[in-house]
Image (cartoon, rainbow, N blue to C red; front, side, top):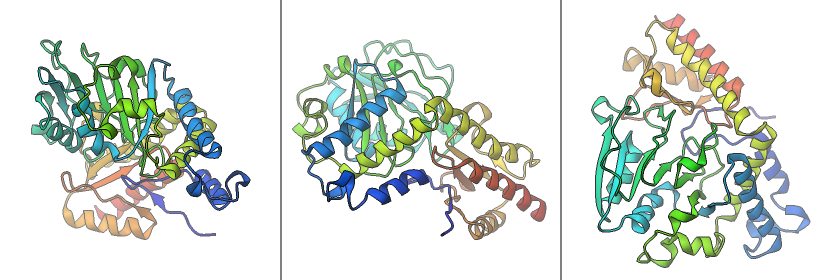
Length: 361
């Protein structure tokens, strides 16, 4: 039996071990078809069942109303940065953005190619240490949409309360979808790359209000129109069949854990171990994010100096902790505690942090 790593990678990230084991068992003979799921025709009954199961489970777990479409697309969240304004940013409208990190910057950059944009609020001057609070939504009533990034992997911040927007609210939830309960009906469109909480990379989930989809322009190329994928049930072209299969297995695992409510409780416990180690360190470890904006998914912190940081990361790797180096924008360390990261890994990391502090003060 090999030793599983304590996987704190920011993405692609940990996948539940039972999911990997089930995929391994079914890899060469899916449902007695004599084929791998990767070999099935995407028009076959066998694959259709997988596809529909993923859709049904996602709707069940997130309480998605019938007034919303669920799409399985390709291109990652990065394609959505362009696809959204291409479909919804009309020439006489403005797209509004709340800036909370590198991914909201990239979304804004792409939107600028298609029309008018406006930054409604930003924490960039504070190096994105917090989610902006108390900003005004007045004067945006004629806007095309308001875009937010719900969780910021690089800076370790996360929205706790979403704005009640007078215009369609769009959220990039790539790194925290399914980590906690949300009110889907606050949003007109949610998109999420799979490689954090949903499975392997390759599929992007889009959850969109039907009424909002009807406002899309007809100018986009066929494959970049949401209507194309709605009409074809995400089967206009060959979908990422294996990634969708893995998504369905991850969703089954979430359901077995007790659903999103139970997952949220586990995530709060997991993050609590590490944040407690930071808070109890007498500033040996310092959190990048302010307390009111701290992420359940990406915990960012620094040590007193670069030498200690390198030593920490070296010794951590020797203890089988993987993926703890912080992004260059923040430095220090980052522990990504996505749904599939077990509680034991977070407890072990917190214990190592305390031990390292005791040995290096």
